[in-house]
Image (tube, rainbow, N blue to C red):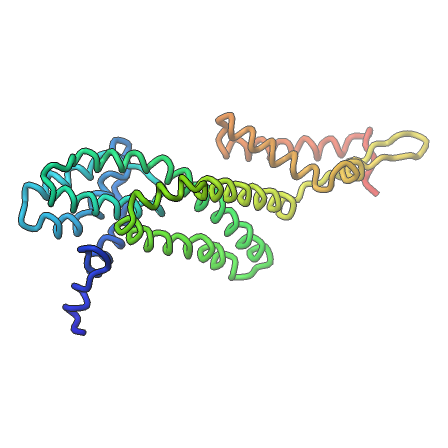
Length: 286
């Protein structure tokens, strides 16, 4: 097969391999022109250009109208955008062939998919895979192992590229039927819940293994008797203080405190605790 024939080989429907690859790579620039008016709209329109050129190759006005459609407000988890892109391509093909087709429904479908796909994408890629990648990567980094950043990038990006690549094909060939089947069967909801649970589990294990927070405060009870507070905390719950510290920082951030403010609070708290340890009412730890 010649190079020209290979480029013109159909992926599915009317989309060629060359067009597929061009649309796929352009989707990676989704947030290149991110702004607060249209957010990812310009990036999505840029990714659609090779598809629209093929669909409206003999209709310049149709191409302009279609491109204008895809420059409107758009916002989604970047890894999920190719699925919507594939559906949009299939709908644009229908719009170009069927004059009775309502072209405004294309943006309506895009808008309808942004919320559900972002919920799934954020849970999987930002809430789960990134957290797992950080947990694995940090464990290597703490040992001075170069595999730390490598493992983080692989765990987060291998699923990303697979989903982005296959998403364009699935969206184009199966489109809305894929989403409807996944939603009606309950698979989508179960997968999202499972991803959230896994992410929460990983965060919990990271708190226990990576946050080191203990106290050396020992109370002088009189008659040469002392009480080490750390032993009391360990009897209540191992890693109790790291959990309290993590939850406190989380609550401060939820209330709108900046991370720099939280770090300053921790810095001052460390000084206060060190000062208390030096007071006469405390005895040195055994």
